[in-house]
Length: 295
Image 1 (cartoon, rainbow, N blue to C red):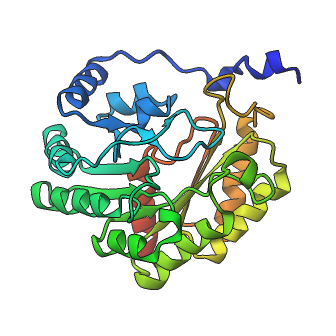
Image 2: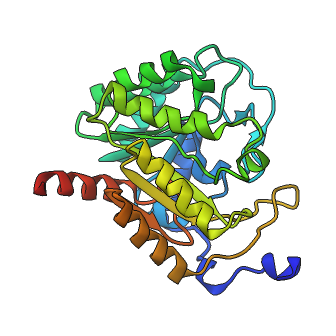
Image 3: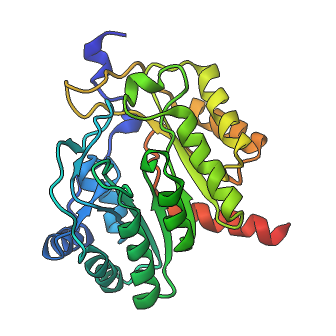
């Protein structure tokens, strides 16, 4: 497939331009609250759909990342300072939006001793105070392998802890130069060792140069550390500076991957071209809770 064709999206990846009433309301709310969303910073294709559903993924710890993953649209650089007031503004915004489910992620902050774990914990705790009925999912970085940092988040008792492995083992260092495949698996394993009751979640991006068997291998590795929930979605190149798309995975292939994942023992697998780690995240947890009730 030529590079030109790779840059021309197939029909199943084309989505309407955002701009509905809820979309504009949430955009204005984020600006007035001085908050960031991964929906915007990572150029998520689902932003129109999610914001119309009054669902957004908050990105804390600023909008500058200390890492430069080759698939990611978030700005890389040297962050300045730490916003201690962010958890309060975020919780107030969750209350204003009347959210029942909230997803919080962040940039990598390798410049901080705890990687930003304290701010994560404070966000969870403030939401518990202001909006006690709202469930909270956190999508955390690897905290450079710091168990103390991970424990700070676990102790705040989020409803779901997500850490995306993103890639398969062979190409991991190519796409995530400052990450570590084994470290990511160890993080997910550690969560289960400390608090087995918290559902764990991870995500894989396909179309970055991996082959089919390597995707299955990574799925197996995630199940080896008792990961409960999985998302699989198509890589979309943010710019010419980023990793080229190796191929467009077809919808029927995503369905096969979902079936394989369920067969491996995941409690829920969201697999599709436009699936992202926080896309309809509330539905994933609901499905997990339903399975627990049935068993």
